[in-house]
Length: 79
Image 1: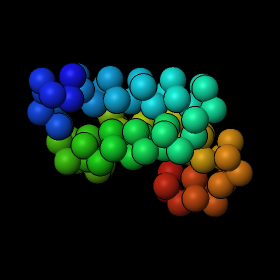
Image 2 (image 1 turned 90 degrees about the vertical axis):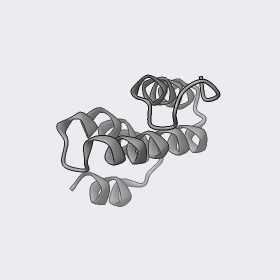
Image 3 (image 1 turned 90 degrees about the horizontal axis):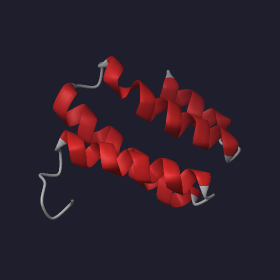
């Protein structure tokens, strides 16, 4: 999909987010974090940083950081 769609395409970003969730479930936290951050940055560019539509990505990224023992980083992200 990366070759076919624009980087900020909502379908592409949805796919990247879901691949991040899969990576997290498999314990591949560095990969998941990278994909979550990419999705978050793209969504912030397209819909703004104050949109409620960022909530699923922020929750996934924050939850994963807590799982990795990075609660302080998760807290600052979710404020």
